[in-house]
Amino acid sequence: MFPEYRDLITQLKTTDRHFLNLFDKHNELDQKIKNMESHVEPGTPVEIEVLKKEKLALKDELYEVLRKAQAAQTA
Image 1 (tube, rainbow, N blue to C red):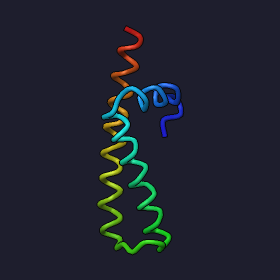
Image 2 (cartoon, rainbow, N blue to C red):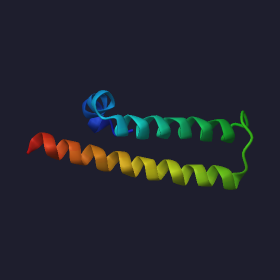
Image 3 (cartoon, rainbow, N blue to C red):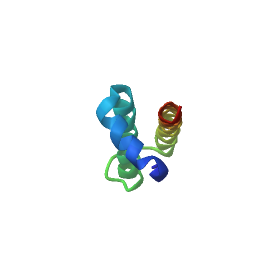
């Protein structure tokens, strides 16, 4: 996710607790979705769809934090 921001992600994970929480939640949802899709964990198609939308919202929020952090570094 966001390979162009790899260094900034590493930095923010150690300096920004909010970013770290968003990042961890995104990864947890990703794993849960994979488990449900592979039938390791029970889940209906509707439940999976809801989780995917939540994951996408987190990704959008992560991207916004990354954009602002990058802008602050170059300012």
